[in-house]
Length: 274
Ligand SMILES: [Zn+2]
Image 1 (cartoon, helix red, strand yellow):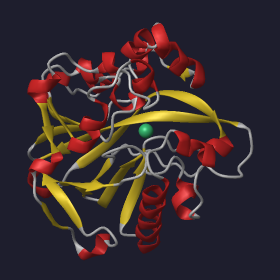
Image 2: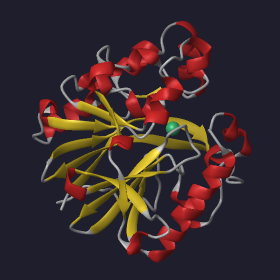
Image 3: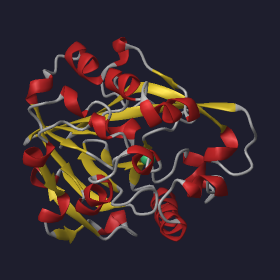
Image 4: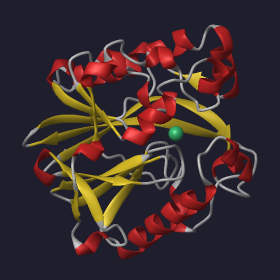
């Protein structure tokens, strides 16, 4: 059984109605989380949250617009590698850094794990690998955040053949097994090209790290999407809603604990095992 620990690694702010239709203009805190997954087959990370390098990379050129559109709060005490060390985990011991997609608030800390194997979906990587300047910015992608040796360290989840998931996880039917099946990668299309999530088998049951398939839990609880304006930056509206319906059904079944990268507020129960 794996153990999942959530780390809050910086945050930005957005008007509430942007992430949930009709929910008003009040400013919402939008934390970015990374997850440590301790398995019998080694330590995995799910995304990285923000990092000091994000601030540096968005302080120049066209990327200044990124920092202007989403004001980010991050200080060095929140760095993922620092928080891991504080929990007794040496960043060098991370076996694989799994990336749900290439939006900068998920990958900003990549270069702080120079020894980890990297893994993402191939369509996710293909969609961004040649982008720069305004083209990159439009995909919320900041090329400078990538490690220079990414070409030799990056593997694709598609290299693992899909296998059947337990029936309890319906409507999700197939996933790609990592760490002896303690982690099952699933496609959660719609938010970004090649956007993936991970079911993790823990002692408390299955946890679904659903990344940005929704921004707040009310979205899948009530089948209530984000602002239409958000689809200017999200990848595909139809598949986004298809994924949201699957999350809704999974939530109704009660068979997995769904965890979104950015959720916050009264209904958020921190995922930090004793
Ligand atoms: Zn995203």
